Length: 176
Image (tube, rainbow, N blue to C red; front, top):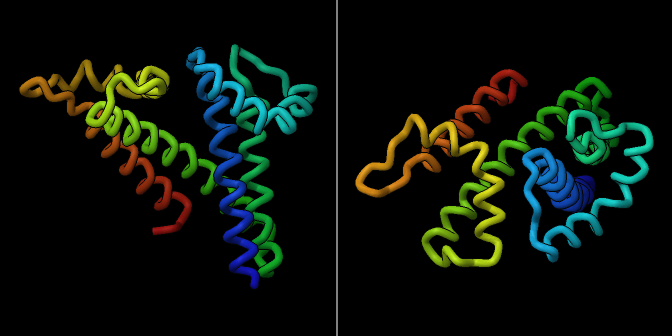
């Protein structure tokens, strides 16, 4: 029964945490999303972000309330482990690992979505948004990795680097 509860909690937490991280990233890199994406993002997250902004104001142009909100969501989802008898220190460590993993997987997902858009429909309405969200990751790589035969391999390099970062993260936290 605990596994079913954990599945439900993890699914809801991952979706909510992903939207909170997307909100943080869009504001951090100053991307203006299409109205439908902005409305969805703010509708889903305002209930948590607005109260947090009273305690954690934005500093340096960053929406820290969204980032802290995402961590609080992962911490709450990880607290299901307390029901299984795990110590709080383990739950906190697991929550931090999951939070950083969510960030890495979010970047990987954005890269895959951009690749799919480029193959299937480069003029898709969300293609410019996804491209703008990936640009801070790909711009430095494009300076180092030139296109080969007109093929931009920077996305592949970015995916490999993110997978290496995930491997290192797992090793640091003792999951490998």
